[in-house]
Amino acid sequence: MQSFEQIKNIKFFLMDMDGTLYLGNNLFPFTKELLKTIKEQGKKYLFMTNNSSRSVLDYVKKLEKLGIEAEYDDFITSSQATSYYLLMHHKDDKMYVQGTNSLKEEFKSAGLNVTDEYAEDIDTVVSGFDTELTFKKLDDLSQILLRDVNYIATNPDLVCPTEYGYVPDCGSVAEMLFNATKKRPLFIGKPSPLMPQLAMDKWGYSPEETLVIGDRIYTDVKSAINAGVYSMLVLSGETTKEVLEASEDKPTFVLDDAGELLKILKKVN
Ligand SMILES: [Mg+2]
Image (tube, rainbow, N blue to C red; front, side, top):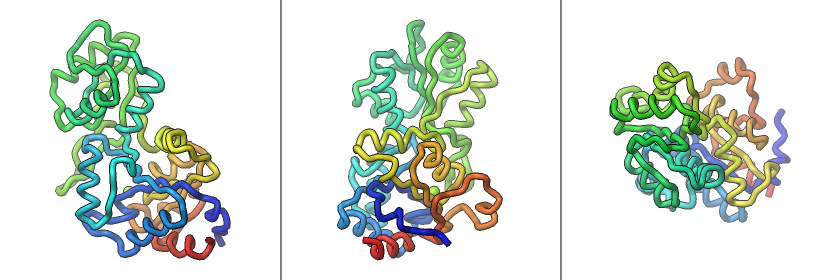
């Protein structure tokens, strides 16, 4: 039997979206009340996503369509986390960004020195989920990565789901570049601990107050384990009981869905 006592002390909920709060275009029936309850109890939630190509505003629209009010500050995306990481560690670098125009704009508006032109004095390379990828960019990167530069990528996902199946994501492009250059990037998105760590840093919560909730072990739960925060797996999305049993990574809590979290929150407070 799991003990839910610790949930009482959790004040910061980092929430995966698809498979946790909704499935595709269908909102789960408990989601609105769950979010409302977290707020009413004086706690905080953020939506946490590895996606780097869609701007946060696209997510705001998507959630609005599903009936959830959200604003820019309610999100932590891998591109926001990357931008935050770059500001902390590579603030003055000249960086070549291989990504969509919206990603480049996001970095520029954060005050970073962004270019998409090949140059000899590039300090840092940043790679994102790039639906505007060209061979020219791969050629530029293959040259730049031969030098001693910092190499950062927004998310390690190999594929990104579409209506018909999958398209190659940031991790697949990193594989292509590895074949050409033998360099691998530092990945910022889940399962790295950086998104939860940066979120705690930015919003001022401790690991003992923080929980990552999601439907995937190898991204959501793993990022929580790596960051030393609580993890909660919901079985309303990708992960089956069989997969959970076979996994070496065990979440702190396992629930059928986030509706059970709602019940627990109402009970322990
Ligand atoms: Mg998910």
